[in-house]
Image 1 (spheres, rainbow, N blue to C red):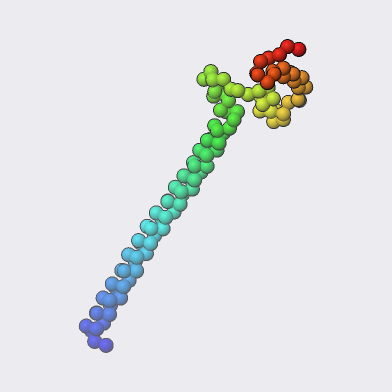
Image 2 (cartoon, rainbow, N blue to C red):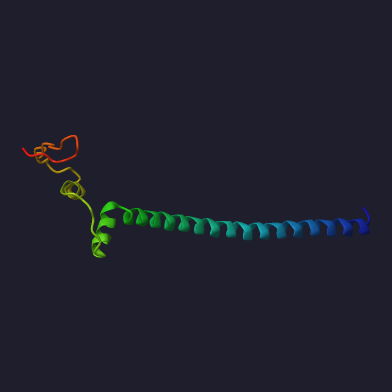
Length: 113
């Protein structure tokens, strides 16, 4: 092998070696960036989960009721619903009042008993 061929081969190997080094440096930088983005993604998912839990808590019936009472709005809960909301069980049933007798005649007038 002649000297010019050896110099050419040495130069080609040097270029290939430098190319490999540049590619590895870029690969390391890209890998670091991917890792940073994965950490950021994990943090954002945690924040999203926390905010979804807070939203679910705020949307719960008892929290809505509390905020409505704080603003002076009336809640149309019956005693049974209030007991169920507080204890998780329905209240004991009260006996029903006797039904009133319908005393209207065919013309729609109320008759007398």
